[in-house]
Image (cartoon, rainbow, N blue to C red; front, side, top):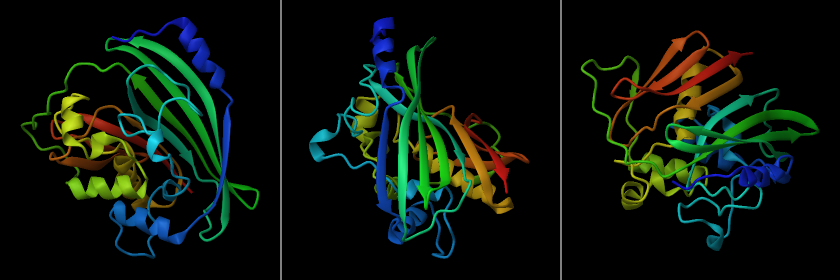
Length: 271
């Protein structure tokens, strides 16, 4: 166990309020690649959560850590807990992104908290991202990252006696690669089997949380245009096992593992 001190937490909290401002032109090809990665086949069909196609991380080859993420420190603090995951997000869509036009994204460290649970220390970092065009807010997102200890090896879920309800989703290795490429996500748990099993202790490659969220948003969009979409990951999803996507209520959708465990739940509001 790594252990976290109050002095460390106080030091990490000094990053609260730190900002990064980025500008880019929203290229239609980037959105097309993202759409293909999440399974869209018609170029006229806007993909779910389209802002994820833009403002991608772009570290130099020497500026990535052993897990494939950008090295610790810089914008977010250098939290010493070894594992980092994208845990949750809350997204609002006050406007529509205009392709081929300039945009500005402002990222701000909004919050950093420390908790101790049954699995050890947890540090949660919240980052607010605001995308503007022509001085108008088009997307606002608050992402939550969790840092944790290594923990014990995770067993592969065993199928429940009764198949869960929902639409079965069967991503494969190529699907994970394409999503990693479309979002410039270098995290090795999505493509490096020896690293995933031997270092991080998982029984198989991990399906991206944002990939699952995009599939759930796509399911929700069948009922109408999204005004907001928030999700929280509660359990890992493993390659090689089906994921069941379903509407759980009028304003929520969820992804369920083969063992019946809800791995992600999302709340939705419509325009």
